[in-house]
Length: 385
Image (cartoon, rainbow, N blue to C red; front, side, top):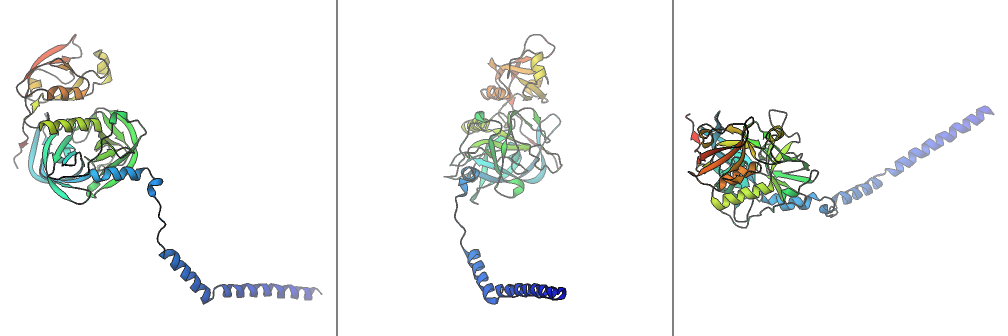
């Protein structure tokens, strides 16, 4: 009986296995495979379902507003250098550079960084559409690292200015530029900090009142746009801090605030020059925000004065015995409020003007007044080959 029961069980199991095999074979007949193939072709050949991506991404409308106003800049010129005293000179060596710029007006005014075009003998501007023009330099300001170009064009897509005074840490930040010459590139981050002071960069430049962002910025982004979530211009990207020799982004990028850009560009366009360009009135100092310990020692009010970082050789300031560490308090009676106050005060004067410079000096009581005769900023000198 036991043997017979085992036999029935084995036969039952074998029947189930055979049935499963037959079902598998029946489910994979050529006819069924042909139906699956037709379904796959229909699915993969169908047009994509249309959706509005801007409904899910707030960045798309912002990029559509700001990106057309950002241009690529290619330069050919002499290598710009500075001597130990900070005086500019040009090496007799042709160099090519790449950077970015932002269209300010529909009829051809463009802002970029001074270091992008410094020493350039030919400047080529390429729009987002691919159309290109040769540009002329209207004026520049090495102190703020800004320059204004002009191209013979009409109806260009111009950026809309935002108010950089209203920025808050944590606001969205959209960087648009030409990193490594790749062409228009968009990166996104946030405003990481505001009013960064005394940033000394590797090429001898300095920054103050800068916007810090973690939106990735790389070489070639200089002069490009930093925009808010509305697609408005809130800054001009100008520098990064990097841990490597190649200068790659580590999330520490800096931009010149749009309100500064607007003020400097307006004055350059109105007057054709700004102190810092050859021939303009020149004091001959580099300055920064007053360090907190020096402000306390001199009993200065918040944002009062500008600290002298360096006095250039044979400059009006050096002739008047103005020294590094001094704090400029007033120029011809105009009170200095931060480093922009120095530029504002000098802008009002011309070469040859006699002005009274009021300074505070650590270790000396009271204020000191120096009489200075403003000179013309020297032209860059071409070094021998």
